[in-house]
Length: 401
Image (cartoon, rainbow, N blue to C red; front, top):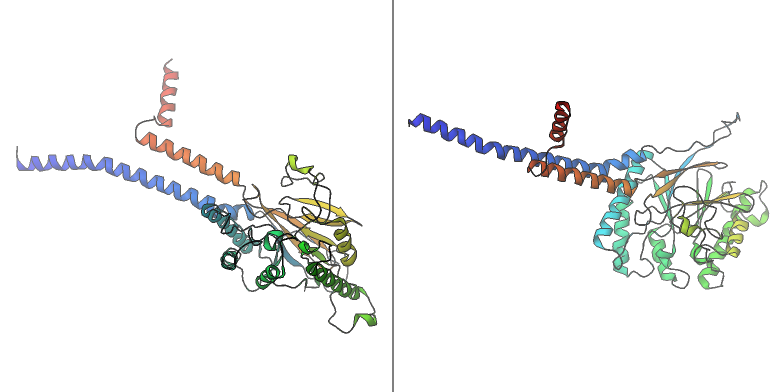
């Protein structure tokens, strides 16, 4: 055989050998692209697609009713609850990584798309604050600020929950001060003519303990200041201190005001049917009737927002005061977490709920993608016939018959 013919034979054999390698490389590249696309969608893009549908509710102002004068400023406030950042004792590293990534992506996406002016977290920020050591607490706080980082012009305020400082029998001054060192200790927060009262509801046990007595005294002082702000002619007993806006406050706390159970709660994120009729235990599932009456009497709020139950509920108290229980923000507690968006003025408010991606949707997407990848791999390996070829052969067989 001539040298040229031998070279041509070797070249042809080499090309035939390279073709399967090239096909395998293309298949591997396609599979990698599909995996990357699924990860990008489930771990990043889905938050934008879901939260993009949320919008701030419209709130009535005097100008809308044909009134004269300067329109009331509208404050965009975001309310979320029960993030339960896992700690060193009960938090498995994989569970911790997953849940914190979900909350970080949801919160950062909401900040970017919705641009709230203030964010309120209604307690149980940490899961193990009631017993964590100084080092574990510092680690948890560091992770919290990473997840819930925000621009300087956005204010973040929080109230304490039973997982942050413990129930009444667990809390002490050290845990409260530790919490207040991280989050602003102010109980009364006023902005744009709107008063917010942030209550340490764990301290409303009513047994006369030092912490409870101090909390009640502080609330009485706030009540006095609010009542003075409502007086057109300032009485002498109100003193010469800075006057608050003449606006009924919004009450923010972790425990809900007293209610028997969640039987009258409705909606897709209400408590499950098997939990709705479970009686609430006072001072554990909700505030006591006495503490609830005191808060409504002392503060005369126009709206109450609370957490703790991990489920949604709307309850009317007293003379029609609405309380909204905000569901948990963590997928560890709910398949469908959410937060509340509030457009608030000194005299009016409007609320809307923004749902986050359902975990079932994410898991279904991953399972569907895994099944598709497995099918493609088997087809390429020749272990399963291509669905296209199988359908084409069936169609030809049907035509010949």
